[in-house]
Structures are given as C-alpha cells and as structure tokens.
Length: 121
Image 1 (cartoon, rainbow, N blue to C red):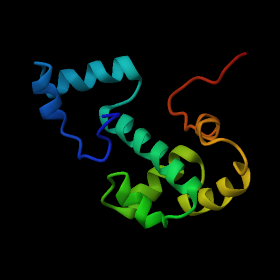
Image 2: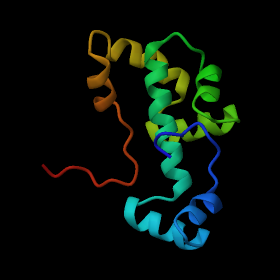
Image 3: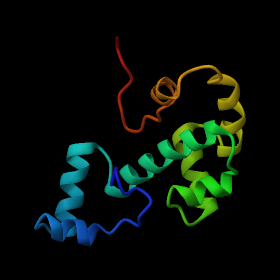
C-alpha cells in the first residue's frame, strides 16, 4: 500500500496473497497499525497530497486524482479530517509556512498523525 497508494484497495486480493480471509487480515492489520487498511491507505494518500500541495503548481483537483482518489468530495473531507483544514487552505498556508525549508524536513514536520497518542515528552 505504501508503494502503490494510487491503486484501488483490494483487501480480498491482499488477503489471498497472505493466505488469510479478508476479515482476519483487516483485524490483524488494525491490531498492528491501529487503523483499518482503508484508513491507512488514505493516510498515505493524504501525506502524498500534502507534499504535492506544498509544491504549489497543481490544483487541488489535480492532486486528488494524482494520489489515486476518484472523488474530490471524499478527498477533501478526508484531507480536512486528517490535516485539520481543507486542501485549498493547506496549499495556501503551506506555501507560507514551509518556504525555505528543505522538502524532506517539511514532510516530517507536516506529517499527519492519526490514532497516535500525543508525545509526553
């Protein structure tokens, strides 16, 4: 999923590949990663979308399709849930916030966190 995040998610095919039922794979995946396979995939897509939006040369619609989402509405909703702001607002803010920062550091600093406990320090 990390490498082929633009492809549709086929839990049945993944399960067959590891000789499990789809339900068992989903339960084990959630136990290992703290989220469903679909949520994990969407997190990877949103991470990539964030990087593309930081570049500033693609529209939100272009970014949506580039990361494998087929619905702009679903993409915008998930992006907003995970990042805390709509993709268009993120694109504007990220251009100002990450200006002059190497992309590898900007990616780490802006990585979305889902289902992770806050650092206690």
